[in-house]
View 1 (cartoon, rainbow, N blue to C red):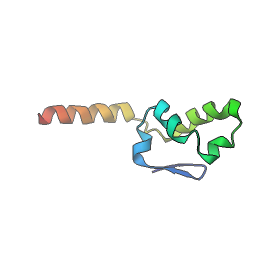
View 2 (tube, helix red, strand yellow; view 1 turned 135 degrees about the horizontal axis):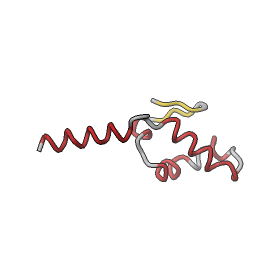
View 3 (cartoon, rainbow, N blue to C red; view 1 turned 90 degrees about the vertical axis):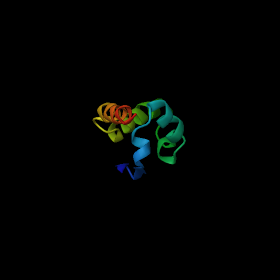
Length: 70
């Protein structure tokens, strides 16, 4: 699990798009304390920090394994 300033993100949150991440966490108390003008930048920073470095590669490998099973 990834953690950022006291918020622990479950594994499934690490692999979602930024738009979905924003919908889920923009109303979180921590982000509401960030000034409105800086909130989106902070959300992007956190999303980038918790996202696995090889998310696209992992997804591609998973898709290939599923294709090979068929």
